[in-house]
Length: 292
Image (cartoon, rainbow, N blue to C red; front, side, top):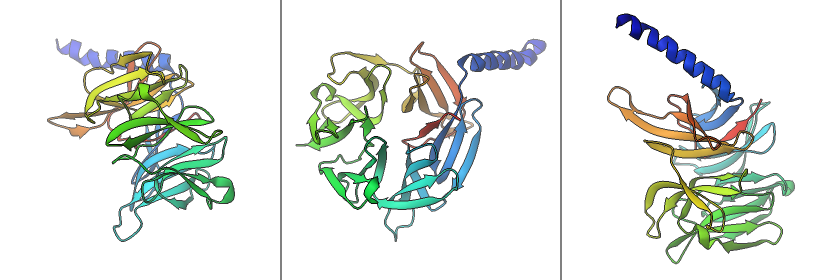
């Protein structure tokens, strides 16, 4: 019996290594906390890139190969709290550009979609140095969520109208928006767009605002839908990686000895498998995938 248990970790290590090699995860995740850090997909290695002790990073979004869009919250109560900045991966510089939160960049149009100081959904033009800002919607929810880009010309956003939640689609070319009634029981909180199938993976929310704890995969009309289970536990999607057709999952777990901890997994849509890549890393709401 003693020999069996002494050999067990060795066999588990071999099994894990073989599986990780088979999955062949490459690249890194860029996330935020009180600073900006990276998490290697291949081995779960955590590394701080830039320390920001007076800020809490809520969202990280990609601009291009060398620049990230960072939404932060100033921990000092005497200053403007919600700030948006551009971070240069090469120079390690952080430049603040706007007051606001939940910023997302659209490359084709060179614009930043964000919530301003009054939590109004707005669009700023990068090409004119953020001087012209267009307000898209004034009826934001109590807790605004980042918009979700679904194509080069369209994005989804949440709106609360007449005390009811709804998901709307905005089109850059027509400069118009319409409500997607087929998504009335979806929330964009912890939602991702699966570009491989043009479907939204969303958390289910009832008309009274209560979350069911279930996740739906659905097209925009709501006609093609199915429930997705990530297994026993508390999980939520963080980012979809289109080149791998996988999502990064955050888990909240707890034990008597560890207390609360936050494993990170990769879930494959191809076969429904789930692979743990980190034991305890709390990711920000929006993160970036970089394949080095």
